[in-house]
Length: 289
Ligand code: PAF
Image 1 (tube, rainbow, N blue to C red):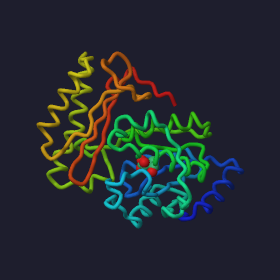
Image 2: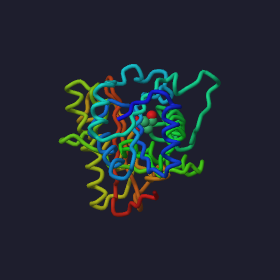
Image 3: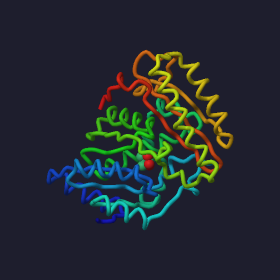
Image 4: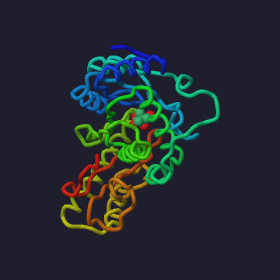
């Protein structure tokens, strides 16, 4: 496995591969790799001749009071995990490598970026769309793979790629969970033991909602009120950021469930904000990609 720090080195290799018709897959990550990331790398490995993984804790997607400095990092561990997963190139730039010090240039999908997570993280997705655009320009992949835990991120990136005519396929991979249901996240390491015990209820609440919908419940305000009450009972150490039911692709809030729908939650613990989401009526869901 080659390790590149310089964007230019990556671009030169990517350009060579592109001109030779090599099928390249990109897996963008912020590192501290876990089994969720491994599932994305495996997916890319199965489809591509060459797999590029980026490892970059992107400062522009963190707000001023967010957890950039606390975001976990372990470069040696990440190198070993990527190598083991059969990655060809690990791209690990510094913020200085990725952003020059001129006036900022943003790629933004403002409508979708201000919903859900965007209500408390209004500049987050602008940072994500900007860095992912840069990564796509550097790696020139035929496809890029993202986890569905960041469901909103994936839909915003799909809109961006379509609106900007970027020639890449975006692939979403299912959420990987701990045995008790907690979605894998690099941030889980920042949970205290009792917080970790309570955090599993995020998943349990979403599952409860999906079961109710399968049983015929369609009223969203009642559904959300019930899950919210469950969260308040079961997560004394957590603070709900949002709990919403929305259209899976437009992210528009829904009042009743009569077609495709998804539920998502974000919960603050002392040193970690966790997100999760779930389809509410799988049978009606068809991915536009
Ligand atoms: O999902 C993430 O880990 C990040 O938002 C991404 C896509 C790597 C951009 O920094």
